[in-house]
Image 1: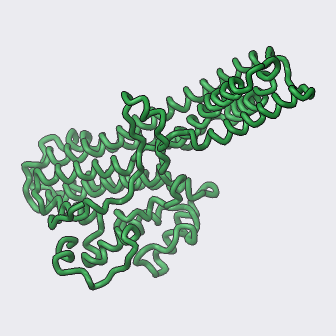
Image 2: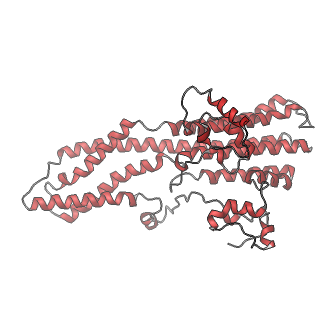
Image 3: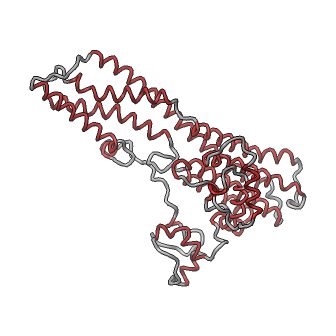
Length: 413
């Protein structure tokens, strides 16, 4: 790609790696049949080949006088049970998959609507205090959404949500003060070495009603940030923020705060799906019946089989159908991560960030939108060259040097 000298597009070619989602042309049958990205073929193929090997062994043993085959009648009835269990589990998992996508859409919608209402309801006020308030509300909204995405991916990535790059050090410290795990588990807070911070951490830990895991604390993070956002929304009541007062402040405040409620409703729905897997007995029964039925299928089909090639093809594709469907349910069980069929939740959240920048730009101008973006990317904390390498050093495989030209240094300022 060609680099440009625009501040807004200089980093376009070095975006954070996102999930490579599965894309396909449903009108191209050959492409759909042969595409490997996102397919279950790589994982199912060993089962198919193994079952074909069993089929060949049973068939030729029977031809040699050692008959291990069984009557197929019992297998027919068991196949009904296997089909029912597999379809039932697949239907439940697909329903959960689409429900999770709906909750994600609600999160994105709430963030866009919240910032737009906050901006529209105060657009007549062009004072510095109003501009600062609008930017702070937008910043808290973006932070809430970004941390929520990190929470959803915590089980896959293992990265704690209070360590996201978009969060300033003060916000990280504030977040860690609300955690109820040990100080060693959460790590040392950035920029804090005194005993006051440790006292706060220990104090909150004493309020716990039981032992809390890192996963428990991860799901607490959006709750804390939602409080911070609500507090920011209500900060205009101090009287020194907005110069043009609302005619009906309660209505405006409720209208804006309602989007925080909608966001948290969606987050709790996502939390319910993540923390409530399918009942283990149902999964255990489904897989027990599936594997038993699949790997005893050759013994039933070889009972009166004559043509071994036809028999092998039948076993191969039957195994692919049943085991493949089982792997499909496993694939869509957790749609938050880096698997091909997972949601690109962070990529879609970044589009929300951009929409918020545009909303702020339309009312307060480029300087306010640019300032918000700098707060999100943290580019005000270091020099331009250091920021660039902090964000993209892993992709470039290099370390900061002074060898860049003055022109390139200006691009990433």
